[in-house]
Length: 398
Ligand SMILES: Nc1ncnc2c1ncn2[C@@H]1O[C@H](COP(=O)(O)OP(=O)(O)OP(=O)(O)O)[C@@H](O)[C@H]1O
Ligand SMILES: [Mg+2]
Ligand SMILES: [Zn+2]
Image (tube, rainbow, N blue to C red; front, side, top):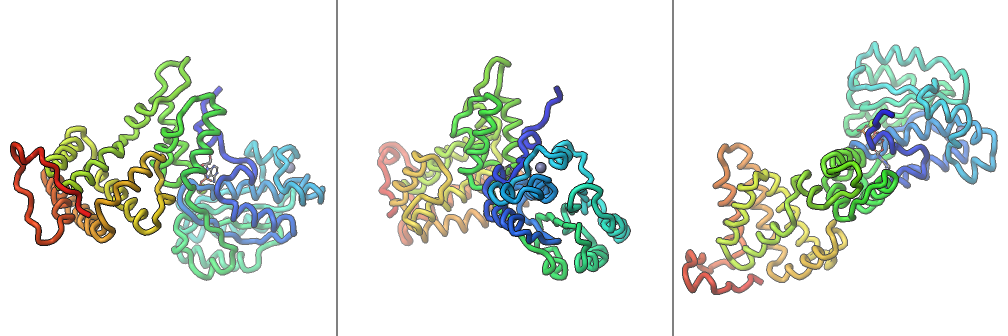
């Protein structure tokens, strides 16, 4: 049997399986129930969050004969049945009632004219022909204009779904003729649940910390999470008879820098300890981690402190409980103004480092400067610690 990547194998086939986009699936299902299906839709949002998937389920649903013929089923279930001839055609990819058009590579007026021509013909079977126009923001202005008329007076059998990752590039003339749906980033907990389900299907044991790592790396895109999971499986399973994936292997593959190192930075600042800070810098450099990436994550680490200062809760921190508790504890060392200043310094450094070669020693300097930022004004920089002095602990900055 040929191997199919996870993202394709687990593409949802019904509305209920589309994670974290209930605000959209519910609206579409309601409009199906009420028989108020529009002709133009814009699906916008980040890559890999379900736009094409939802468009396909929608197309399948409007043509499902069970939904069309059985009012009770339509009202109670409002999902494509998956069994009628039309649903089967959709699932096998042979349905003529769905056309996917990639606007990134067919963006000329001629391409649109051809599409327009095609739209005039109604479906041979079923009720609607659904045109999914992907990456629609890539169409030229002339191509958009060529489309306007069709969108203004579409044939009764046509539904257009425009999918885009860049909503702001769609002309207002097009947007105002469509219903707009914004797909959200997939929250970490939903992502974890989805990945967990896939691992169960695949009979793999993966712990929740590993799934969280994968989810965080994917930054809200389900397709990215699933591709990373594919990669993790290939990398982390050592023998065929072994069906578990170890956290350390996942961390290794994803080049994940453990939270401890970021806490070491804030500890070094709190303690005014340049030696500790230089140790962290050395660790990053010696292990071949990307300095820019480290700074980016360090900013996120400091952002987590701000969350605690401002919300007095760790609710918005996407980390395991033990780490959240540590944030709560460590906030006593700083205050939000100091943390803001540290973030400013890092943002500035990120810009400057971009244009430098051999910037390892600059990276060290940036980290050392963090200690200066947090030092109460007027106090003297610490002398280079030596002998007894070095063992004397500095008071935390409060
Ligand atoms: N909300 C979701 N629930 C469950 N799976 C999802 C979801 N979003 C994406 N996926 C998974 O990711 C894959 C890709 O999703 P999809 O093609 O719908 O993304 P997209 O939003 O159209 O992305 P792009 O902008 O890159 O075209 C799907 O096959 C599916 O496995
Ligand atoms: Mg898509
Ligand atoms: Zn059906």
